[in-house]
Image (cartoon, rainbow, N blue to C red; front, top):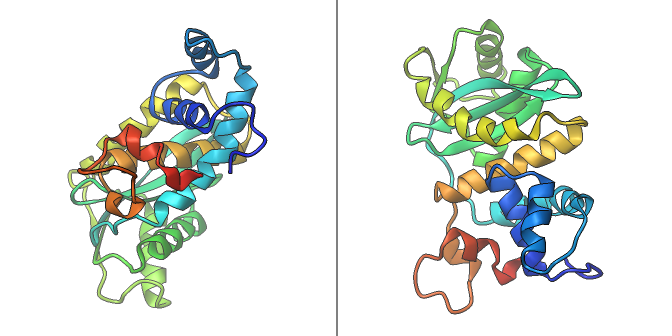
Length: 233
């Protein structure tokens, strides 16, 4: 996985993890590595993020634990090439991330695409869906229930207060995206956000870390140790 790279895998994983988790720019990381006598270009770290974030997400998803069946669904905004696009997100009643999807539009088709992705990742549909007052999302749920894509007994709720949980959860993602000052391409935005969401899911404890088979682990490992696991070789 790291063959042909000029730096050790630990350095690469560390840079990718720090960029996705903390409010750091690529140039901040270059300066931090220089203090450790490591000289690299900021574009190298950028390429590592875009190359490895999807692979890390794929490998960690093998150990993902399903979220609850009560979903809070909402959309937030992300700027790509100076234009606003929409990040669909959902959490369960405990605040665990259900799924997310970046979409250029905010309409019925986009809402359906998000629900299909979430159902596929969770392995089943929700028992309860809580939405805000946006009509397109309500229509998407009704049509999916009628078409059999959602269980017929799925309860649909509209509540400003019940959705406070997902609105608060948006902040963790937006606080990391904000310092990036927007994205230049939709694809790189989707990759970066997927990496940010992965780090947040790990911090929330949504993975069965025992399945990672960490060498020498005698207890639940720290997040840093998880991300440097030999399973990433």
